[in-house]
Amino acid sequence: MHEYGITQQIIQIASNQAKENDALIVTRITLVVGEYSGFIGHSIQMYFDVISKGTLCEGAILEVEHVKAKWRCPVCKIDFIRKPLSFACPECGQDGEPTKIGKEFYVKSIEIET
Amino acid sequence: MSGKEIEVVQNIHDENDRIAQEVNKKLNDAGVFVINVMGAPGAGKTSSIISIIQNNPDKQFYVIEGDIESDIDAVKLQELGIDTIQINTNGACHLDAPVIQSSLQGLKIDKPGILFIENIGNLVCPAEFQIGEHIKMLICSAAEGSDKPYKYPLAFEKADLILLTKCDLKEFVDFDDDFFYKGIRALNKTTPIFEVNAKNGQGFGEVTAWLKENNLT
Image (tube, rainbow over all chains, first blue to last red; front, side, top):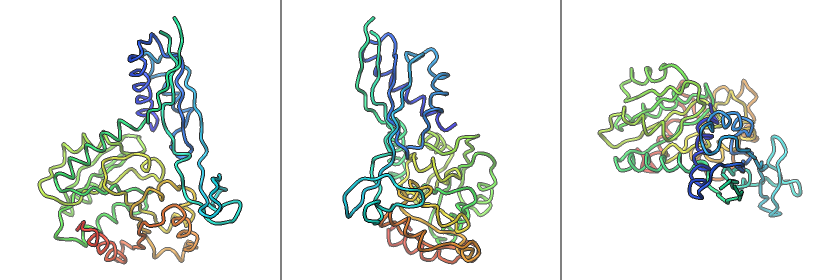
């Protein structure tokens, strides 16, 4: 159920952009999905195939760019991917702080036919 | 036909967030402070809500109970005289802003106060959706284990207030205080954390004091 409403939003965003650009159809939708956005590309695809029927987005390829979450070390100032059950910086061992990297969840672009 | 690529860069949560702002404004204008109560199933969300309300007998409270099924918690609250409505999501794993907006029609708000919105029992998805709240209160029980900040970091990062419930069970479940607090502080340097026990009321005086300090009760 989680991805159903979200997939409706994706189709709405893509369809609005397509109409503004006088598109006949949308052929591709590219999403950027961070690790901590909580969304699963496969599930969005499953709902997309059903919900997009009869819309400008029917038949479009759904492409998902995944982004791994990163932490920032307050000492070394480097961004790193954490190990399980730890937030420690791989360089100095200090706990890192959460960043925005990995929380992305947006429609990056669409491809249309006019 | 000819093809072209169009840059969009639009957040998929935009529509939800817009409605969340509407909900927040409406309630804020009515003098209602909204607390989104998040936590795993069985963490003690309803018991914590009841304990806070019973510690503040002169304050007006409202509750929206979110559950996948059943009205057990709503009935419990209503029997205590608390203005409560129930939302059943019938499978959906979190509440979102449109659901709260439509449910508000069923909640009679005639006085300023605090509205608790008890989210679906889940440590993942509720942290991702704004529902019109002023703050998020995370309920985490000792029985869940001290590794939860590391396994569900977003919920702890976004929490404005954390209650560690069933704290009398710590000694029985090898709860590692240092590990738990270290994990939270890596994610969230400032959020207050209170250890509570709804069975005997331990810790809820401190929660009430914090609410008072922040002019919420």
